[in-house]
Amino acid sequence: MALFNFKKNKSRTKTPSGLESLLRNFSIEVMPRTAEKIEDFSAILPKSTRVYIAHIEGTPIEDMVKTAARLSKDGFEVMPHFPARIIQNKSVLADWISRYQNEANVSQALILAGGIPKPIGDFDSSMQLLETGLFDKTGFTRIHFAGHPEGNKDIEANRSDYSVESALKWKQAYSDRTDVKVGLATQFLFEAKPIIDWASKLSAAGIDIPIHIGIAGPAKLQTLIKFAIECGVGASLGVLQKRARDLTKLLLPYEPTEILNSLVDELEKDRNLNIEQIHFFPLGGIKTNATWISNNGGKLEPSKL
Figure 1 (cartoon, rainbow, N blue to C red):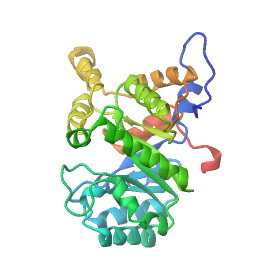
Figure 2 (figure 1 turned 30 degrees about the horizontal axis):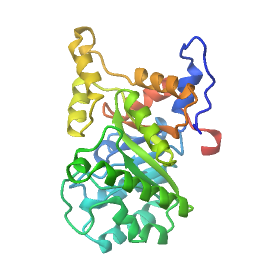
Figure 3 (figure 1 turned 45 degrees about the vertical axis):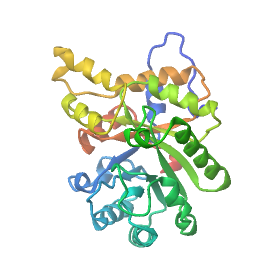
């Protein structure tokens, strides 16, 4: 059952309520260095917004915990990344968890393999991190995994489609046997079709983990193309390349309005898609993204405030 209860619109005209419904309870991603540029998050984001903190290789854990503590103190739900391939061993993982909990009151995590091709220590996958039992033992209430509607070059280089599907079924089994809230937060995309196709494929395979769709926030076209290539975004990169060939649009900033309206259309068709909410990657700046969300009706449900 789809989690967005959109009513069909015979004229197919986009209404503010449709886009606002899609943006409800959005989340957003930051890094320590980008968060430092924001003087007051409370001035640009609703309180209790879930804020992911990306852990890029080379970022000291001290910077990650400091950012988490600041956001937690200001009333936001903090979800730091735990990239398996940059965590040396179980002792280091336990230390990270302890720091996050004791200094920033963290109880949520995005667990992923990480963006490097080979692990620096004992862990290669998100499943191995969970198998340590540390997240369950320390009382985490929400665990998200990375989702890849357009594939992932690191995964595809080492695993078959069967193995990727097996990993998703493992995560589904974990979701079924635990009280922890589980979600799939996807890479950012630039067109709706790969999202819908992937969500349909998961549903057909019996995967009902809620999906949080990754969307790139407003940014210069050249910036988006650069990030898309670096992050391995696949087929939908062509949307940006086509836009770049249109000289009337080349110098205009990209906004995610078109892809979000397309998603509204798809969700209005009452498909059996478990898409729960939108997750923003503020590639053009956190404040720019937050302003766009606010101008387009993004907010939190009263129950989240």
